[in-house]
Amino acid sequence: MSEPYEPVIVGFLCNWCSYRAADLAGTARIKYAPNMRAIRVMCSGRVDPQFVLKALREGADGVMIAGCHPGECHYVDGNIKTLRRFTLLKQLLRQWGVEDERVQLVWASASEGNLLAAAVDRMTEQLRPLGPLRWKETVLGRNGHGEFIPVEEVPAVEEV
Amino acid sequence: MAEKPKLAMYWAAACGGCEISTLNIGEKILVVDDVFDLAFFPCIADFKVKDVQGYPDGYIDVCLFNGAIRNSENEEMAHLLRQKSKFVVAFGSCAYEGCIPALSNLTSRQATLETVYFDNPSIDNPEMTLPQVKTRVAEGELTLPYFYQTVKALDQVVPVDYYIPGCPPEPEQIWAVLEVVVNALLNGGPLPPGGSIVGAGKVAVCEECPLEKNVKAIDQFYRPYDLIPQPGLCLLEQGIVCMGPATRSGCGALCPQANMGCRGCYGPLDGVEDQGAKMLSAIASVVGVGAAGEDEGEMAKKLDEVMSTLVDPAGTFYRFSMAHSLLQRAKVNGKQA
Image (cartoon, rainbow over all chains, first blue to last red; front, side, top):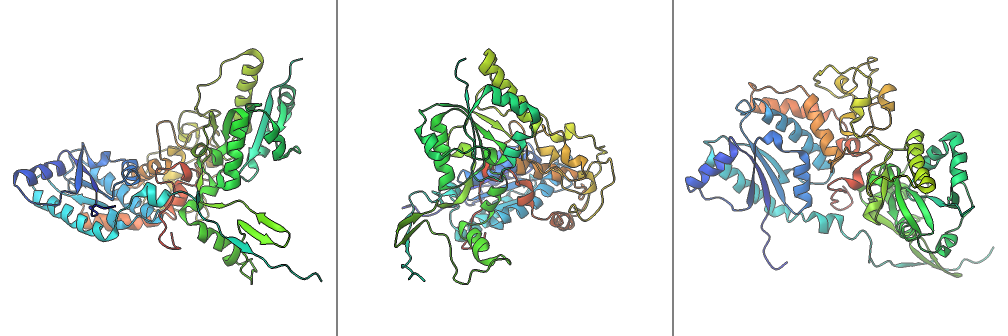
């Protein structure tokens, strides 16, 4: 790769808080890392763990899930379901060898544009030292195809 | 009488349970014998690979392929049987989605070999002998199949026409499928659309399960040996991980009825790519910890405690579907997974 590594973060932002926080960060002209690709979902509880796994497999270096603070969910407790899933997902991802920093949960209300911007900045910097994930190429790989296989030499044994 | 259609059944990385289950269709095996000629069935009849190599392409009508693709020999046989067969059926969970062999995708090839040949308590291997792919001895060169890093499902190696899930598939389901095939071959009956999952239901195991569900939340998980479950009540609501909500029906909910949570062997439901992720969501819905008014930090801490009582989530949720899951294998840092 000739281009320097820039982490790719897929961000799932809830419609009612975090997406508006991102909007606010924009209108307030807050400068932050351009590494997050925002996807608007109606609620952070809409984020199926499959979305996260798929993003990681398809080339994302990290995934950010952002929603309203617990207690402030537009759907009462959607974000609490998110937190429950996320807690278990983190355990699962450790077993898959995915570092904790790669998948993060952030609470940002509609007025917290600065908080969301800071979270994206922080996550981008945390992902830099980890390097690219490139799941398909590095983890799935070629599975032994075309690999050089050495020949073991066993000397002849004298017959007894 | 015209020549009978040809049936083959082969095992790759498998335990042999699929063959047993096939023979368990009972006296109906006589019907199978009436309708088909065996072309290749290493478990019960003496065929050699060179017999298969000698067949013309498409000679075998139906090939029931069970077992995952663990090494280069499995892959070679998959290609050979695909070439020689009209219909290839991924038979059983291993061929369909990796099953137990694919659990080693959570670790590395090297770690698996070291565990098996050096580290197991019952192993005595002072010369640290490891099987080699090629070994030159005085008499010539000996070869062994290459042991892959990642276990694959059959359809990740060759195109597959039908899938029969289950570990093993239930005999009634096998017969139901064979009946359709026999009817198609003898009377020109209809075949299911290509690529479909046959010999299984369309709903979740919970729909078939007679245990009573009361929408009760839990705050701790138990392993099956930790407690004797209350009879007649949903196991998941008692804290025993049961894959029922995320698993395709077809077995008749046998395990939950014997007080063992569903293992998940019939695989994900239609439209689901990753069975484990769906199970994770289901678990999140039965855990009762966390309410709208609570402090954020407190809640996160309590949830951490609850979820940590669930031992080995990856191995539990992906016990049968690892090779077909979204991530497929763990990222291995050095020797450790």
